[in-house]
Image (cartoon, rainbow, N blue to C red):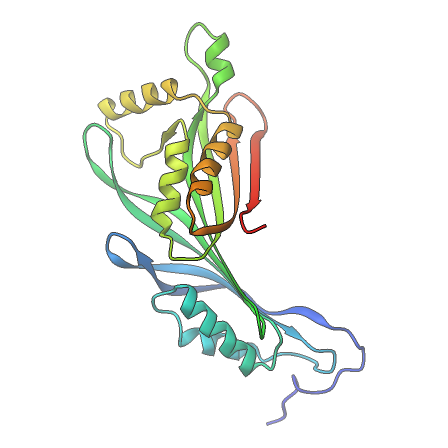
Length: 258
């Protein structure tokens, strides 16, 4: 059959990225406590397209993915991208994988267990000589405003927040390690189920540990700076303010190799 994608193109325009986006796909990811965890990912896959080709072969993205969906880790992503480059005669291949990741957590006093969802993301990019792998996790946390506590006679405003940690590392790092770093830096972790004794504990714990978004970002950075496995990081904290019609935000980035 006629291969329209391979037809020549005379517009002389190089496309940095062509591919597929928002593919919902079952994957198996590494889990520190259970070995592996099955989840459903949203996947974007791209290659570059030279000026002399009209299009790429979209079906080949999924064909390659079908062979590498189990046990996603840096080595598997590297091999998948190299096969994608070769199959599509591309110079650059890139994949972005985002998925919900569930951890069974105990309430702080009652010890009732429930699953809490975190958002994890993996990004990989491969050229002939260079391979880059970034892992990220979004951690829901609680912040309590130090200023509000200082100036108020009764209570202080508090709210849910989100801490995003993006890293590049020399060795294996578990999502759970990054989650721990974010939760320890917050006024308090959040939980899916809290009984009254737990709610009392969480409320008072947050009151004893007030944090601006700036505090949370810096506390996470301190922990990441100590970890010699991490070569680069970006930390973003967004607090969904309960008394303002806006969010508060802080970000810190560091290339530890520079």
